[in-house]
Each structure stands twice: as C-alpha cells, then as structure tokens.
Image 1 (cartoon, rainbow over the protein chains, first blue to last red):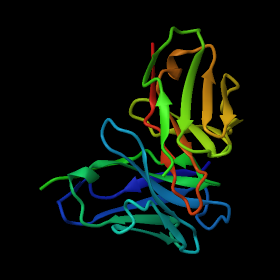
Image 2 (cartoon, rainbow over the protein chains, first blue to last red):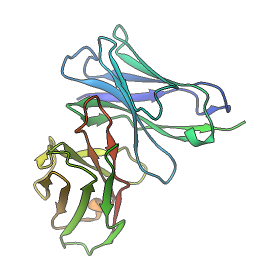
Image 3 (cartoon, helix red, strand yellow):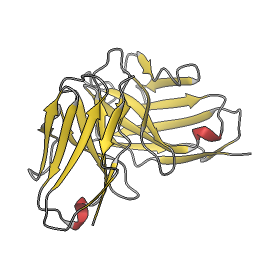
Amino acid sequence: QVQLQESGPGLVKPSETLSLTCSVSGGSVTLGSFYWGWIRQPPGKGLEWIGYVYYSGTTYYNPSLKSRVTISVDTSRDQFSLKLSSVTAADTALYYCARHRNGYNDYWGQGTLVTVSS
Amino acid sequence: EVVLTQSPAILSVSPGERATLSCRASQSVGSNLAWYQQRPGQAPRLLIYGASIRATGIPAKFSGSGSGTEFTLSISSLQSEDFAVYFCQQYYNWPPRYTFGQGTKLEI
C-alpha cells in the first residue's frame, strides 16, 4: 500500500520560503500513471489545490499561487518537494501531499501544519 | 475557475438513516467529480471518482450520482464513523485548475 509522509519546519517567518518534502513508500514516484501533488487547508476552512509534478519534472500549478510555488521531484529518493516563497499569515495551513490519479487524489499523507509567524 | 457549492453546510441526521449531500458546479464538469470524507484530525479519504465510481475499499453504502453541474453523494445506514466532513472536487479543466467545494459537515 502506498504511503506518503510530509516533513519540514512547522514555523516559517513572514516573507521567507516554506519548504516541505513528501516521502513516498510502498510505490515509486516513477510509476507512469500518477502525478504527485500538494493540497492545503487553512485552519477550519476548505481545501486548496496547490499543484503537482510528474516524475519527468513536468509541473502544473494553481494559477493563484503560480508566481510563488515550485514543486520538484527526486526520483532517486522517491520524494517530491514544495517551495512557497514570500509567505504571509494567509499561508498558514495544514499541508497535505497526495498522489494524483487522472485528476483526483487517491492517497494522502497525514498532513503537516505550517504556521507563518514572526 | 469552476466554483463548487456544497449544500447544506451542516446536515443533521440520526444514526441508521440516509444522508444526501449536494454539490453544484458553476459550469459543466462532465463526470469529472470526486468526493472525499474527512474525519476529525485525519486526512481526506477518497470515496468516489468519476462522479459515481467507488474507490477501492469503499463500501456500497456510499453512492455518487450526477453529471454536468449537479451531483449527489448518498450515504445509507449511517453509523458513528460516517459523521464527518465531506468535500467534492472537480478535475475537469485542462491545464488543471482543480477546485474543491467548501464542505458539508454531517453531524448526529
């Protein structure tokens, strides 16, 4: 069974860059049928798709975040990463990594809370 | 951007009864709609994709229907573990512009 696990700092200062990594086990990121992505959920609110990456490095991003987001993949480690620059308090959220299959998300990590605060 | 509107925001139902949740899209998304369940403190879990196809391991008590702009998730014989928040998500656009509904909280 595929498992995903997010890791990274839980506190980021305003204007800095948020960096998270997702480690995949029970399957390889190079499986050709899947994309690997990030979704966030501000406290008490709904879900927002951030973007995803294919093992080849092809990426797609939410237009509302595109100017600040970079998602990359490390096939040698079966990991993919999220960088979100120039963060503000509005970026405080639970960040999930997930496996995308034909547009929907069939496996999710447990999520990691990132707080933006000085 | 496709806006998904879920109703009601909160649905109160008794155990053993049936719940019907709605998701309306601001424009047609065909059958490119998924439903997720999120229990407190847990990650979302995929229930339905393709508007009506149950994901692996999801019991038949969960059923999805609809196409275009109107979708429904039905849950029969409600048990305590079914009381959660349910989200819909569309994946119609290409390049992707995926969006989620704001959620329906199913409470006892």
